[in-house]
Image 1: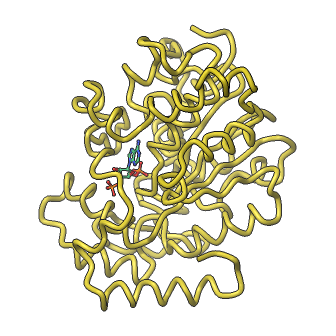
Image 2: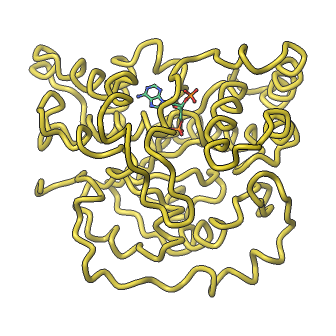
Length: 331
Ligand code: A3P
């Protein structure tokens, strides 16, 4: 194992890691008292956001108990906006000394990106947070928690950095629908779309989720990096450079000359990742919701919404976002 981080979370020995306090004991009463909405997943409204009920106590425990290190990087996203890709790119770029991206034994060729970078909702729900302490620095961690609900130690703390990725909401809804249908084959696209429109979609409203991170990135650009999936698709290399620099690991002239950026892009490309044996088989480890690895790799394009969303539906969603984003530079 590499002496410094990041190392794949799955490779960290957790044999005798003690279980943390059960977040349901600590926050269960608070959660059951919150407004409830039965969408395709049950949601609980906490401080303006519809948290997935099974994760709500864990999110509150993360908020209360997580202690960041100054060199941690927190990868954040709205679900289905490119989390898996961001995890792969960040891991490959950040760990490139220990794991050269072109190497045949790179961890991302044997592990799904979600096995490399821990998802806080799973970790705190499953009481496995002590394992986080075993990760060598710098650590990469991941969450869908809205900015305003992140631990204060992250948003006001000294060094910790945050990277956010979002996407055209219409493509996100289509992606979410296909993802959830793996769990609920009778789910209708109309219901999924309606819950995006009324804001009750998991971690919604989407516009407030995006705005929280947007405003933070404007106020603290050295601490919060705001990315868009479509921009990454258009010029992945440029964004890998930006990401690496933001995380404090800029590519050197020698690495540029050696094609290291291109190797990172190639290793994490949709076609490469989708066709790896590890991503065609198996499932994530989350006990609450284990997802088949292949469900994280569907089409990997921008604009697939045209195959599902009518022009009228598209206009309705676009208008809400236009209205909510008025006065910001967000489009
Ligand atoms: P589609 O369903 O539109 O194909 P998340 O990782 O946040 O769950 O997002 C999943 C979306 O990102 C899916 O979109 C998936 O195909 C896409 N994706 C996953 N890996 C990718 C990669 N390496 N490059 C580009 N897109 C990727």
